[in-house]
Image (cartoon, rainbow, N blue to C red):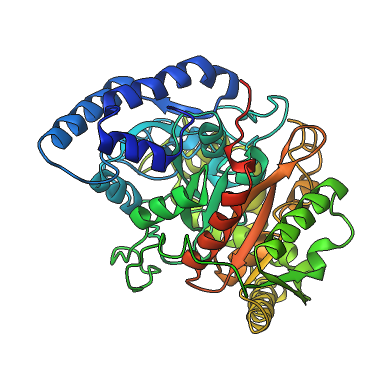
Length: 483
């Protein structure tokens, strides 16, 4: 049952063939058996989970018909959830117990989910490999010598390993799509603003977006129905009408126009990744879709503009962690400036310090116009490229990453090489568009490969339908790692 999909678990609970206590117990057993191997979860509270599961079973017996009632769930450790430790993968928040819940956690609680654990992540969501956590690197369930991708690598590894059928994630530059691709699961980064950021620890406020990670597109649609919705407590939340993201799951693909950006198939793309993507495109053609050659000419500028804008926002957002209001404070004595400096030096890891320094530099007097303003202008050009492309096609497809998962520690000495792995995902965040990753095969080393589907604003239902139809005729999404 732990390797079943969210939909299968919902149906089993509704049919009475299992209970929430039985389901949660199986998940906890799976976690106990394999979390030490994968390091996917930071926090597990078995007693609390079983108590909530028992209450869910009682509520169902009393006539409560909420679909998600009693279903196990894992939250990325970036979403505040009242009473739960919310570390964001950092020593800075290692002692922080959230006094309130994020909108995402509130929505999941209201839907009836049972939280079984909190997923490991790159510190403050900064990383492409999940090697930058204070709690140590997460291991990829398909090969424990390999990275799971970041920063939602803990969530991706947990779903792939059967710790829960669904998990929450966040995507600032590809942090849902890339780990989903590396771990062989499905994940969607929605349109910026349709999932509230209230109570989600901020990294780069104009880019951060929460979304679901699960085994299938159908499960992601069901979960997005829970996560999405306007929130007046988030000034960037969009007043967009509530949607049913499952509505297009069975829509036929005949006549669908798929745009293939030539820049996504140029030098640097691994041959096995390219072959898997092209095979998936052929499958779509067999389902009735037509292929359109398109161009996203400013793709190469996504990396430099992202690594100006995101660190600039990070340097501002992380200024609140000073040891005064909450979180870590140094034990060393000195004046107030010494306390600030020592607290931040002890509390932040190397990657976070690198981005804070970069962000402070590009925002400093004399460099703001030269770097930050120019990066924002490039961001507009990238968004314009996508809009021009959507005049020719319904969705855009391409690889999620140039390569499959690399070995832990392999690229630690070269952060630029890691940043380059984000070349196909960053533009989506800069433009605020929805994008998702769908499993489409494996490389010869056994590592999963993901297909990226990009839609226009608010096209989540269409994208999920496109992915679901592919998963009806392939089985890549249903394969599980041998732990």
